Image 1 (tube, rainbow, N blue to C red):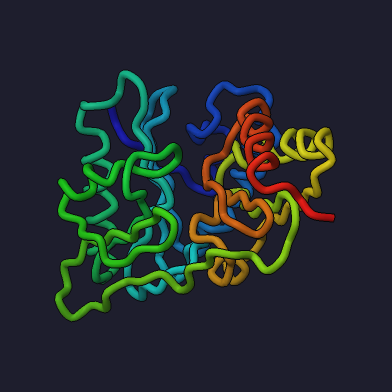
Image 2 (tube, rainbow, N blue to C red):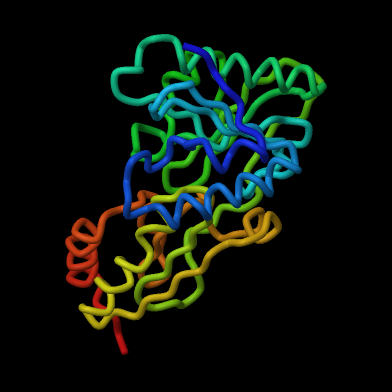
Length: 257
């Protein structure tokens, strides 16, 4: 099985692993592909297994990454995903090795990636990156960690730009998201309907530029859900799960009109 790198010329006819086979996310996948094409001019690489599988890596220079970090001359990994029967076959190591080789060839000082303090959906397994030589270099509430693999001792130590616990005095539900993940784009309207059914104020903001992302009030810019100004989760959740979560949040912290 070989690894293939998608290009601006091939991406339209190739699958991108995310939401593979999910008809309800077709429009979101188109947005994701558009986002990828635009980032490829900025040095983004999207490589995947040449199979109908969710086995891929997506990375770009950290200066161009859509996250609030400071990591000059590092490569930033947006996503490294190996799922199903393809796990434990060395594909994650191979994809990461290809990323490292590319970064070294570009004269970079290392690689950075955001993980969770423990296992969370949509965040990479911290233990795998530790096993591959990465070290935690910074943390952001409530559970985000910035890990780095550094091979130039003179390179800077990467860090988060800002770590925000509260979003002013916004009431109800506020969501920030980007087109980096089809699941995020595809679920927004459903979450809005749930909030409206409970008479809860709902706002969603799509981050559409690198500068907005790098100065955003959330660490994981792909998706961030707040309630009454407090960060709740980065997890892109289903409408049913969101309804249960929102019911619990309202009971614990009713919205004062």
